[in-house]
Image 1 (cartoon, helix red, strand yellow):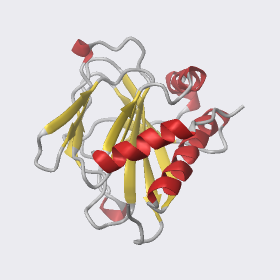
Image 2 (image 1 turned 90 degrees about the vertical axis):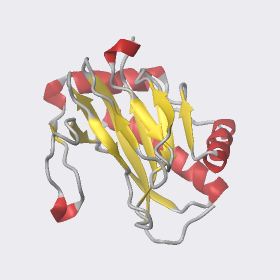
Image 3 (image 1 turned 90 degrees about the horizontal axis):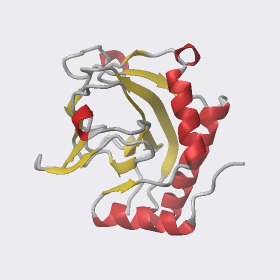
Length: 207
């Protein structure tokens, strides 16, 4: 049975996106879904991880000075992935009903950061590109400690740090893709997460 996101939670998310452009949630994804996702990540024979590239299209390149994580895209045909993607679909529809953002689809990948891996400060969408509109990051790291590193740092448009997010199991960050530069600090332990983006299919969106 697919978990249902309550209308009250969708209200909270929409209000936060209007008020400050981002929100951190700790209990929106059920534990059984989180555990299944983590188990899949840890069963390396189930996922084909590849070094993550920077840039889009023909400009893609591997640059481990900028990012050194390995990724594998989620597949809606996979039972475990489908549970998570169905919750993201509910978020998409709920946000569209409230904010008329025109979110059209969602793409996401598993990301594993081995000890020493990082991702330098960047934005997920170029201003005016009208492609990636909302970023999500879901963390899958039980019993994570501050000294383990790997925090997600979210900055404002003046490069002032707004949030330093522990990559703790069950935490979901949602933020406007064009507006917030962010980085992953070097990790001292293997760090697991799912990064995703809600996209639009045309330029007409707003709230």
